[in-house]
Structures are given as structure tokens and as C-alpha cells.
Amino acid sequence: MDNSAKHLLQRLVRRIPVSMLKSTLDKWERLTAEKRKSLDFTQSKWIITQELVALYITENPNQGMWHTFQLVSVKIKKHTDQAVWIRVAWGDGLSSPNHLKATYVVLYLQTPYVFVNALSSKHKPLLLQALTLSTRHQQIKAANLSGQKLTALRDLLMRQYQQVFPPKYPSPLAEKLRVEKVQAEASANRHRMARETFGDGMLPALQSAVFKLETKFKGPTNEAMTQRDEPFICSVKFSSSNLLESLRHCASSGIASTPVTPMLSSIPLKGRNYFVITDNVLTA
Image 1: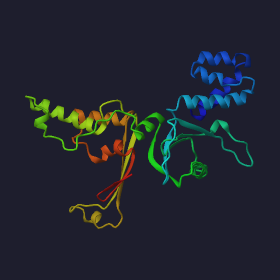
Image 2: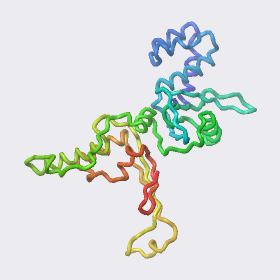
Image 3: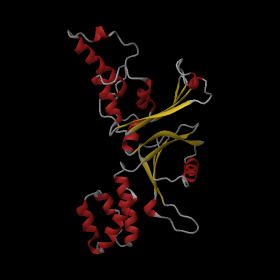
Image 4: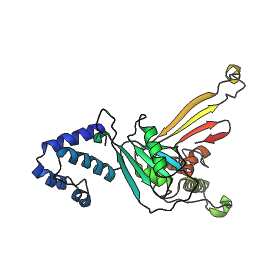
């Protein structure tokens, strides 16, 4: 929920009489019955608005921009398979906490991953330090994964989608695909390679992937560029409403060559969507 939507919700609640607020939320049907029962309508409208914003975001997490961080520890922890939602309202000595511009943190206790929404650069060091200390990890680092859909980021990192792994020693194509036409054989091969890379079921709806090139220019036709000490730098960004699904379609339909290049296959294999490419090295 962006700031404009929060302010709109605040104005709407302000105009609705207290006696009609509960029935209006029941008709809205955006919150579960359990969430609606948790609201205390004897409180002020300001407090109710803050609670509504928090409840709506927890019920509808696929909005805004989420950034992923990875906690680093030398200990193995075992926890339940439930997510912990944390809302942080920032304030200082001169102003009270602003609950309408809160930061949301989702921590999956059985994993080292933390998902953060609406975090400013000013408050980022404070939050990361608090997370590191409170979870008793040694440090926290950026996981180079971001997107608008929290569920897609979670499913990608936790491999919660159907995957098909290639056999360790694949047999020749002729032994697997006995078809009469060369076109059908090639099509079956493309689909197989696409499935081996991206799986066979629904994929997390990742919106983008960025590849940054930092390498020396190589080419005999341009000595001026070849003799430069500074690396050649450029960035390529792939965007789609569902990037992994688009890449799988390109591979299976023949738009992209197969087998899928290691750069693109690294997105689902490494759970990243930001990569830096140096001389013969692909890093996340």
C-alpha cells in the first residue's frame, strides 16, 4: 500500500461514523473475519486506521517493493514453518512515530531470509543492526533479490515451486526421443531443456533481472578501447510481468537458443536477480 492509498484510507475512515465502521468493513470483504474481529472499535479512528493499514498489508503482501536480505550464522537453527511480521514506525526525539509510513519486515524463522518493505536509507543501518542482534546472527547481507510480489520472492528462495532436475548422465537425444520428423524432435528437445532449467509448473512471478558487465574490452579492430585500463561497463535489464515464465517460453518455443545460457539459468538456481559479470566470472 503506497502513501496515497494510506492517506485515502485515512480520509475514508475519518468520514465513516464510528457506529457504521464495523459493518462497512464487513461489506468491504478485504480482511478475513478473524482479522476484523481483532479490531477494537472502541479506540480512536486514528489508531483504528493504523491497525487497518497493518492488517491490509499482511493480508495483501504482493505490493510495493520488497528487498531480500540474508542473515549469516555459524549455528543451525530449527524453527516452525511460520512467518513473523514486524511493523516498525519510525520517529525521533522531535516527532512521534509515523505509523502511516511504517517499515514492514517479514522473517521466516526456519530460513536465514528477511524481506523488507518501505525502508529508507536513513533507517536501513538501524534496522539491519537490530535484526542481526535480535536473531543472534553474526551479520546480515543483501541477497540481491527484489520484486513487488513477496510470495514470488519467498517461493524462489525456498524452492516452493515444481522443479524438474536433469539426470546426472543424460542419455543421447536419439535414445529418448524417437520421432519421425526433425522438427518434432527439435521441439521436444527445446521443451525438455526449458523444463530442466525452469521446472514444469507454476513459476514465481519475478518482474526483472539485471546483469552488469565489468570487463576489459577485447577486439582487434578497436585498439583505443582495447588499450584502456578502465573496464568496459554496461548493464542489461530483463523485464516482464513474469520473467521466469517468459524465459521458459522463449527457450521452449525456439525464440532463445537452448541449452539456456548459464547467466539466465542462474536466476532460479541461485535465487538472484542481480548479477555482476567480470572476466570469465559471474557473481551475484
